[in-house]
Image 1 (cartoon, rainbow, N blue to C red):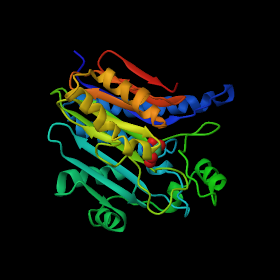
Image 2: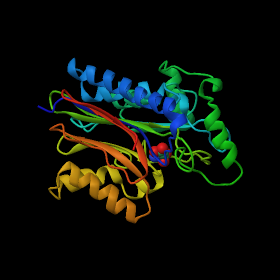
Image 3: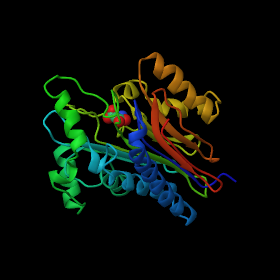
Image 4: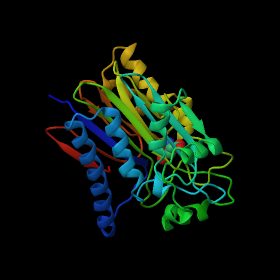
Length: 306
Ligand code: ASP
């Protein structure tokens, strides 16, 4: 029996570890394991897939190794603007937030939008006001400061470009996400990100967009993406995987591999995704050098970078 099961990611891109980074590598793998363990334990205690992916993403948001929550990258103005989404594959209900500043756990606000509003997505100042009025935890700027992200921003600043925080040379890190199937066969997906370093003008990537970076549907699968968001938006990547299963009769693995290694790659899009179907099959393809990722079910726990 493959149920329940959970998979998570911490971003895809160029990831270079050499011998002296082995301590850092361990920190990454330990962080992934901690999120997997908590998410999986919830699934075994009859929590829903949606609750479990939300919790796993919260744990990754609290870890400054990843570009989400605490570890979010800097915008062109030297701020942190965070996006997140969550979708329940049983009800097809979804919640998303974009451009949040100061909120400790954007995914919790997204989940609240799913549960307590008639909307799917809220954004900007008004979304921040929503988080305040609903007593979500806020943190000062200093909480979101990490030297690595600051240095990455300093390199980019003024250049008018934006980058994936985990592309280019060296050890760099990314967006987080989780997908799960619970004991009832219900699937769910959640994604959270600080977006791309030096982003401007309220740029929003694929992560909070239902169908692009996040999607879940019990009749097919649950997906969370990471990579160059503009390509994932144009390719409606998460929904494309679901459609190939639903209309094209593909398996999860065939559908996900086609999208990442063929369609997305042909369009010049770099990145990867994690996916689970309602039978508990998991697949985690990426077309970049590496992707922080892991999966756990009753029989195995796997964490990988390359
Ligand atoms: N997909 C995210 C974005 O474009 C970035 C990432 O995956 O790290 O905002």
